[in-house]
Length: 226
Ligand code: CTP
Ligand code: CA
Image 1: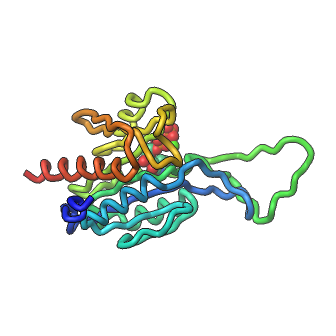
Image 2 (image 1 turned 90 degrees about the vertical axis):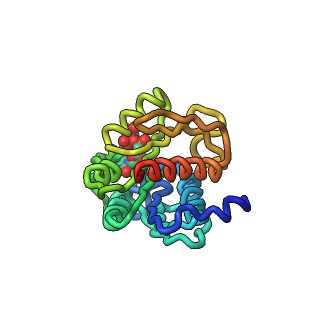
Image 3 (image 1 turned 135 degrees about the vertical axis):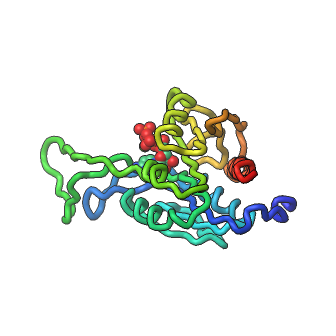
């Protein structure tokens, strides 16, 4: 770790990381969310700051401690996150979208607490905007875009499709089906996918995973400058 402390190889780099789940309101007391705890995104923000980067963290609601040397922008819904990210995107050199963004939100949000009735309740959902796809289409020259993909089947195939469809430089593929990977835990098992190939990382802490992801990004950016 001491060696890492000294390696300020991301100085003068502006990086925006998103982390955590989004919350989509149903009424004033209820919302739809997912199992993301934000740990992977926070690890990326922390390690980037440690390497000297200027870090903005757009964070859904999490139980994690505020990071030092990181500008944190708290958000709740996918629409909040869209606004927070797109309004800050132009000045970023690197954007990493580790957040688990809701794909759907309730179409109508009740202003009052909904009272229960006999029988079933159907909540109509509408699509949210895809933040990463928007970033891919409106990318600044030289900006590096990294997404995360959470899959339960066809991990590499589905993740690579997302890389291409959203015009990304990198996607970090996460399987929910692997021991030591996925939501909540302190370890992860990921595959880093770029257009040139794939690197599978073994089970390691989310902080070490974050370091490996940042290493790859720094290397690819350096190669692009030659
Ligand atoms: N993402 C986003 N905005 C959304 C949905 C997803 O920016 N409205 C981003 C996530 O932050 C992640 C990447 O897109 O970096 C992939 O998310 P994922 O849920 O795995 O893929 P989707 O494209 O939403 O496809 P699906 O959920 O149908 O597999
Ligand atoms: Ca999704």
